[in-house]
Picture: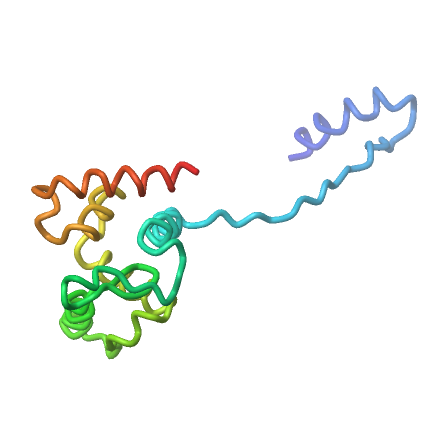
Length: 156
């Protein structure tokens, strides 16, 4: 151990012009703000919201279908039922109502529950196209155009 200490200290004594202490240059600390990058799924949700409703919480679409889609993510009643089914199956106490579609946070929560159950490891294209076209999205041509719009928003 003494040899190691001597080997470490020896160059200091030699270069210090007979001084046993070496003056080290001051440390410069550069403070930078901490930037927390958004989660990639947040980017997808933002893109879907833009494509679905342009961010309007009270948006009502597809009135001609009898059961309109509502809110920022244009959620239909069947999706509310599906999310509630998933919650029950997973043993979650959370349940949603049709009115919850007008609430941005609850709509996003419904989306994340649905996505986590049906598309845990899927890519953004599969998630977006399924959100638009349902379980048979691969066979529905219009979901390709929908994905193009979502992808354009992701790249902006």
